[in-house]
Length: 262
Length: 312
Image (cartoon, rainbow over all chains, first blue to last red; front, top):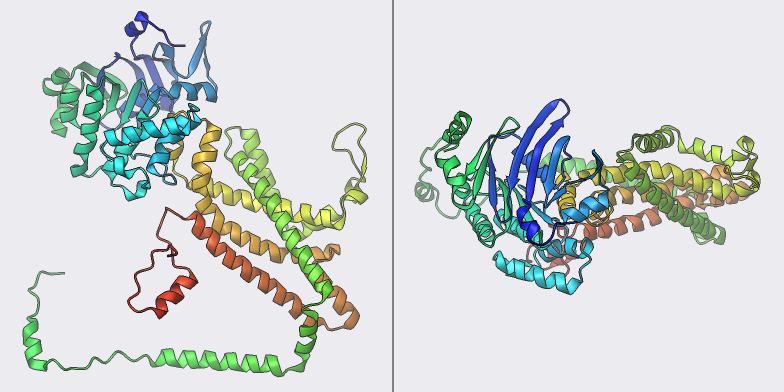
């Protein structure tokens, strides 16, 4: 259950508490602490293999957390605390919580056997049990919003990468999430298509959506993010206001990374 | 390639003039091989139609014989029932093979290794002789006691033998289909809040079908022919019906030809069916090859538009 009323505003949307994760012997996250407030846009930057994508995937429990706790909207994600033990939740309960968290992937992951419209209404109809009409109406509105109102009946493979990614964003928004996660949303795009996707994300940020964005777009991070967290070797090395971290980093590792990507 | 300037074409034109004829390269070897093959073909045909031992008049009589027709019906029935059993059990086994539970996974693995590792003819004989192993069947239910000899008729033994064996092969086909779907699809579905069962049913399996359908068509055609094995259990299928007839009239070769003709007719029909089923499941995924009808139309209309893979 979510905390309601005035108290809800005080609880951060995401709170990571010493989050640990390892794949086999490799420790990918070494106790990450991070908070994302409601309506805040936080960009995660850092070299590949630094754990930023894994951290993002821990937020909606696509990856299980091995140590520490991941709180989303005042609840531990993927687990239920009983006494001093965390019990992993069942498939159904995890799915119910995931309906409130939208996610956009690097490779779009649209369903190729469904039209654009079917991609959007699938989850609202199956997971939220909405009527076809209600879901369709909202889906068409969202497609207009991302500038693809005329592509409702197209199949994903007939769209450009930029268009597919905008459909993927609309698909996530169709669930009316409280939180949006973006995993390198522009990394697989041709350079001239990046702008359209970033524009949609900028509009979304301006509308007050809480967003966590793993990105290599430093310009976007500086302009749109409220705060930027720099990941290195499974730890948050530096976190602070976007302008400060991107233009005047404090930590030596951050400085080296930013110098290299410029 | 180096960036040399293109040869000056106008010069060639001037030197040779505009009215040169183009002589395509000759291919004498192609003509020769074609001629040899045609000769062999003609000789074979001549022998087939002049050798009286083929007994074409007998073939013609028995092609429409009622017991052959009944045998064909049994063969078709057996094919349909065994494939159905194979597909249903195959999907279950495939999902079991991909389970996170190691016991479930190993059980499916053992099933597949056993049924793929022994000849289907041996399996058929095993089922047929089950009564020798378990005279009464109770399935572990106290009080239940069935006479195995009466339960396991030749037809039941045939269905069990062929169907359970087919399930092992189908499970591998279905498993390959499921694995062919990108991991990202399941992640996207999960992130949207679809349960694992919904993800399998709505996202993974529809995409896996494209990979599953073509080999399943092959399996069906294979099954049709494999059913001929049940003649050893005295199930009156197409082959066994022919055998009964020739054991009485000694027209062995003509009756084997009759059976072969019917097997070929049905496999041809199944092949055509397979072509159209595959087209249906490939929709929206790639440009489809034209159907024979579309190809024919193209041949007879000049400047035909490039086949789009859709019937006009």
